[in-house]
Amino acid sequence: MDKLFFLIGALSGALAVGLGAFGAHALRARLTPELLATFETGVRYQMYHVFAILIVALALTRGSSTWLALAGWAFLLGTILFSGSLYLLALTGIRLLGVITPLGGIALIAGWLLLALGAWQSQYSTIHY
Image (cartoon, rainbow, N blue to C red; front, side, top):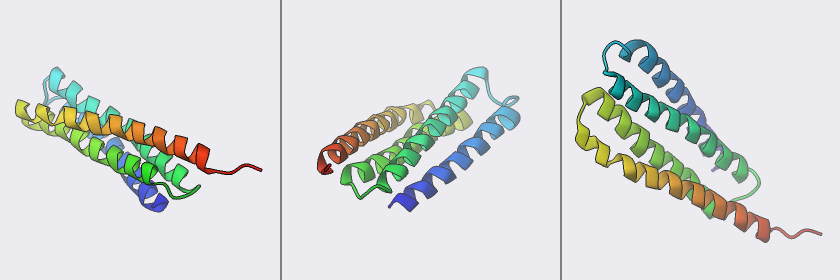
């Protein structure tokens, strides 16, 4: 599972950098400043959560944990819903897509809480001699 999350994190990071460059160069002249800022917010949150996914992968190298695995999936789902809806909103101008964004935000928050549970569980499930 750790390798899967390392792969997801690395690919998401590459995608975030590519989308950031696309936004800075190809979209600057095509989008309103408001829509460009929306696109950039999607990129920023995607990149933040690349590190969260990589932290999950690193933590999973220390042992299997349901909470940590769920955190990784929540971060992935949250990134897709949150950043993805912002990308689509910026590119299409369809404001209705904005109703998806908070669902992604909830998934991202859940990911952080699940990561905390995973850390808590590992702290008390390890016997120290």
